[in-house]
Image 1 (cartoon, one colour):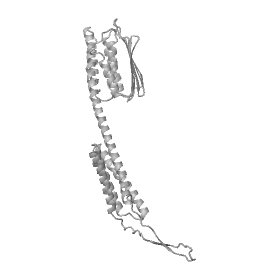
Image 2 (cartoon, one colour; image 1 turned 180 degrees about the vertical axis):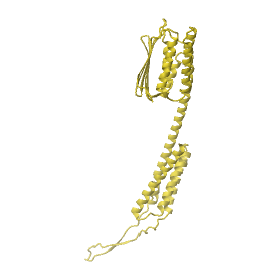
Image 3 (cartoon, one colour; image 1 turned 135 degrees about the horizontal axis):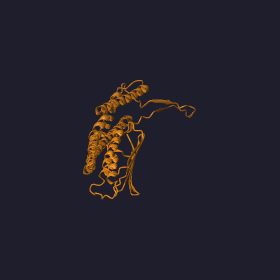
Image 4 (cartoon, helix red, strand yellow; image 1 turned 90 degrees about the vertical axis):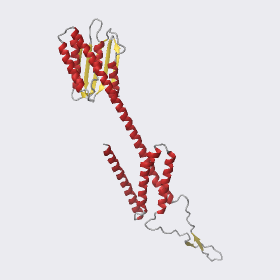
Length: 361
């Protein structure tokens, strides 16, 4: 990939220089009827000056904040261009400028009725400091130096931005792995508590619960290592989790899940919703043993609306371990769905409600 980008860049440079060279040579031919010997030589020198500045001066001096050395080096390059412009002749030597050309203008002054003729000589041409040999190489080479400097500084800025993004991506990946690994033991701990509850009651549903837990763990081990999972698989996983919870809870008539909408090829980040549901079961039983957990999931194209409502029970909160799943899920949402989710968590009428709107992949 990097090699392809380098090859593309070299090709672009070659095409641009071919275009510039073609325009210069064509303009010279149209103006003079020929291409002077000095033009290809000076143009080749310009290309050399461009790449000396682009590949050496900018990265080794300017970008390392050696500004005075960089400016001095640019001045030396421009001096070389000026000197070369003076030394390299045209194909044909220029016609000498005649400083004493007699221009006979007869001016009649009427003196004794005889005209008197005066010879008027054209004054010599003054060759000042800002002559063509100095101005042309400066104004021709300076824009290429400026363009080369700008290009190299942009390349460097772009490279730094890519490195910064790569570091941020690695940090996010590391953090997500940490959060996922922290979430899995949390889920297992809660599920084992549910099965323990069944075995302590010597329920005949305990073996089924163990099998169901093994299915849930298989999903977590073999499918959730991918960045995305099929939404259908994630919803099946959630429904199996609810079946497991219904087995351990005696009064389970108020444990409901409703899924509306068309589930086709949508994808979702794995294990994103389960923490909200786990939290609902953990705190959704009141002092009378009544449990209420109502889950509503609506899919509309790539938009998912998730709502989970549970009773606020009287169970004492474990300050050390409480809210681990919720906190992890909030962090994962920020990392995985930036600007693509809206989360509302609130308590109302002795009920805890989570509402999430999510834009799926």
